[in-house]
Length: 249
Image (cartoon, rainbow, N blue to C red):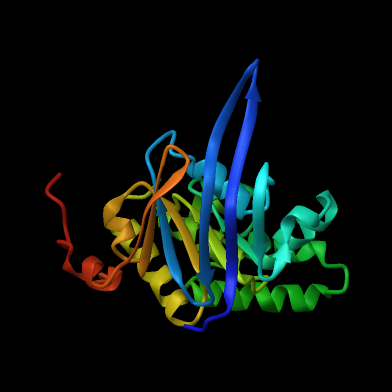
């Protein structure tokens, strides 16, 4: 892991006007994430987790404070510049997969590359195939989402997040719709990607998922309550292997 800072948040505040009331969703959040780190962000409903996720993903700007993504101050960017930054710097993985239903796995993964007019159709395909091979779905290129299990659909979503070679993968409750076996399989893949040098920021409310990361930030009422390294990182691959092979129900 290098000392290069991928994320820098400095006293981030986010306020919303709801009717005549000001809602303070984030109240001075500060932390850094370095290249190659695997960070989980935890917090219950109302903790400010979603607002922070939207800020990290450049979907929203803070009311106060400064957010630098790979050295770029997002507060200085307009809407189109933010869209380009999101497309090139961040790979998003969502709880609900967000795949196009009548479109093959290969075409779903190619989607982010369509915004690059300099890229040929051949290069798009090559990069999409490479990303699907990286998530062990090289034999499912032509399958549509309804021909894939939930875990396989999430793997397609992760391949789509990888295809632009972003500086950060930002995952929002990416195991929330999966059973235990599929969840641990996805976390084993995330750990493998992290070991290859990928920077991961994983938002979750599940402590057992956070145990697979190297560091956890806990939010409460819009503030960082705890920022702690995980000195005993669990192996998702080992956890998956330890599951019983069949269930009795």
